[in-house]
Length: 482
Image 1 (tube, helix red, strand yellow):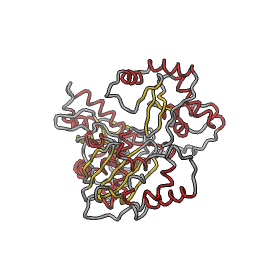
Image 2 (cartoon, helix red, strand yellow):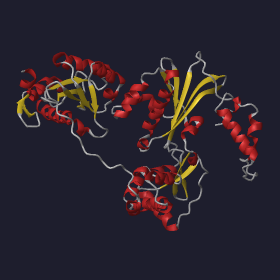
Image 3 (cartoon, helix red, strand yellow):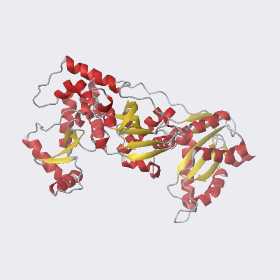
Image 4 (cartoon, helix red, strand yellow):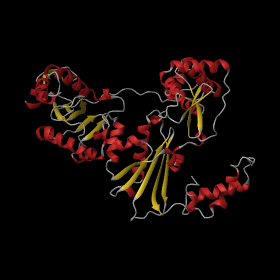
């Protein structure tokens, strides 16, 4: 990183000499006072005026991002001659909930955090966004997105930028910011494996469909095979960030052996530290998942480790409304079928007292503004404003625009906890009922489902329901419309 910005450090070669001397093969490793002074000088230069610059409002910004297994990094820079000069650096630890996510989600998270961090610089002006993950250039075309991805993309789409792909080998500065120090260690070239283990690995490679195909391509010298893989004496290695890791095939006895070496023999740490120990020397696709399962089923850990989780509280049901129109349940139901008119989702609104429902067809890409308009036209105009709305955490229900609209009309928003849709039970029950009824009325090709919504809603609203705690059977049409 210091070498990349050496142009901006006065007398860089002289200042860095004690450190560069340590990289020579004929120089013994000894961290002297001169080395410490050089290290502190360069660290100060990277974080102060020698390297950093004040932003120039007349020049476009260039944002470069990267994500690793354990962190994200970003640089806000502007062009100065042939070099990019940084305005500010950003680095952030990856939260534990995102450790098991795909590379695409991690890279998108890095972009989201960088843009929100520098919102005061970037919002309302054009800039260049560079990342070493090509799929981010088509983030708006993904067919299926999680709620978190929808929220991030909704924020990212507020900015005006040109996405550019940059190869990882040229993304060294941001790559450094996103990496943990212990993962840039020395290259591992030797493994203390017994002959039996080595023989078992070689035999198991033949049974592993993924790794056997890589070995076949390496032996055939197929140019399409990733240069990160290497075959040494029958063993497959994966090299990333200067660290060569042994690929362990899909055989339970072998993976359990290495899991035991990195868990049982290292004081029975948790699954994250176990996976981190594994990741420095070994690799297989489901390593984090297997580490978690191994630790959760470790008898020593279950017997000896104290419980740190807070005791679970009692479940509390939502209060029953006193009258119709007081409280609503809302949800977006995905039909998975796009109709002839371009509709795919159903906006479900259910009165929690009477069970009266409105079903509104809409496109999958409908924005928050459009949802607010649908709500006003299909409910507020006929029944007025509710006191409260129960919903899940869809990106449109958690947006600032939706919250502002609710606050303006004096409506309290009650959102269910993550991964617990049962809390919004009335909307979920309505979804199941709609699915069941649509199956009876839609044509075989299913592209006319939105034309049947009015019929389905009418049949549902004219049925009888147990509307109150006392289980009084009522017709919702009578309760709502008299």
